[in-house]
Amino acid sequence: MTASVTVRVPAKVNVQLAVGGLRPDGFHDLANVFLAVGLYDEVTVTHADGMRITCAGPDAGQVPLDGSNLAARAARLLAARYGRTADVHIHIDKDIPVAGGMAGGSADGAGALLACDALWGTAAPREELLEICAELGSDVPFSLVGGAALGRGRGELLTPLETAGSFSWVFAVADGGLSTPAVYGECDRLRESSGQGATSADVPDPEASPALLAALRTGDAPALAAAVTNDLQPAALSLRPDLAATLAAGTQAGALAAMVSGSGPTTAFLAPGPEEALKTAELLAASGTCRAVRVAEGPVAGATVVA
Ligand code: C5P
Image (cartoon, rainbow, N blue to C red; front, side, top):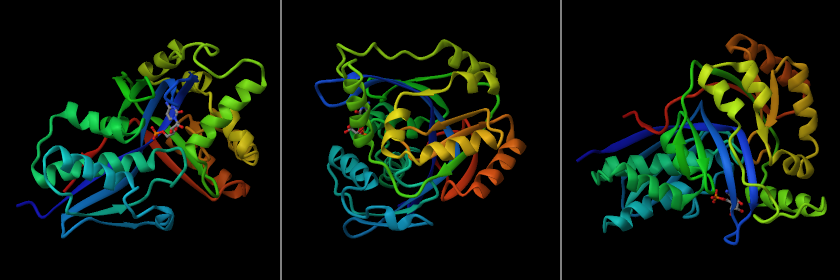
C-alpha cells in the first residue's frame, strides 16, 4: 500500500479576465485566460484515522484547517464517489500567497484530489477529476491542468492554449486579503452605478482577445503587455485604493504591464525577461508599497505527482 503521495501545484495569473453579466445562479460568465506560473504549493497525503489538515509556510496562519479547506472538500468528494471514507492526513506546504487572487486555495483542492486519487488507487478518469474540480470552484480545473488555457462559463470550461517560450512575472503581495465574492459584487455595483446595468442582458458576452491569444502563441512579451486586461481591476481598486500605488511603483520599476491578479489584492507585473524581472522585483520591494515580492516564470505544468 502506498504510504504517502506528494503533489506539486502551481499558482496562476489571469492575463485576461473578461467578466460578463451577473447570471441567475450568482456567477458571472467569463472569458478567463489563465497562465500557470512557477510558485507552488505542495500537498502531501498520508493514511490516517479520520481526516486531519496541517499547513506550513510563511502565511500558514491564514489558511483554514477545518472542513471548509478546498483540500478537505476535494478528498471528501472523491471518497464519496468511490464509497470510502476520507481517512487522510493532508499536509500543505504553502508558498502561494494566501487570499491573493493567485488561486492558492484552488491549487490545494486540485493537489489534494490528485494526491488522494494516487494514495487510494481510485484511478479516477481525468474527466471525472475535472468534474470534481469544477464542483469545488471555478478556478480549480485550471490548477489541475496548468499551462495556459481559456476558461469559459464561470471559468471551469477549459480550452488549452498554444504558447511559445516563457513569460517573466513579478508579483507584489499586499497586506490582507480580498474576498472574491466581494470583488465580483463591487464590479456589479460599479456597473449599476454607471448606468450600464450588471446582468447578462446589460453586459456584452465576454470574449478572449485575438491579439492576446496571438501574443501567447508567439511568446511576444511586449504584445502580451499591450493586450492584458482585467475587468475586476476597477472593483479591486475601489475596495483597495492603496493598490494603485503598487501598480504605479511596478510601472516605474520597468514593468511592461501592471495589473491586479484575478480578484486581487496581489498585483502582477510582466517583465521583458527573467533578469529584468529580478530588477523590477528589487525596486518594488524597496518602494514600500507591498508586503512581499515574488518572481516566477510561466507557463508551467499543472498539478503533478512528485513523490
Ligand atoms: O467558484 P468559486 O467558489 O471560486 O467562486 C467564488 C465566488 O466568486 C462565487 O460565489 C461568486 O460570488 C464569484 N464568482 C463569480 N463568477 C465567476 C466565478 C466566481 O461571480 N465566474
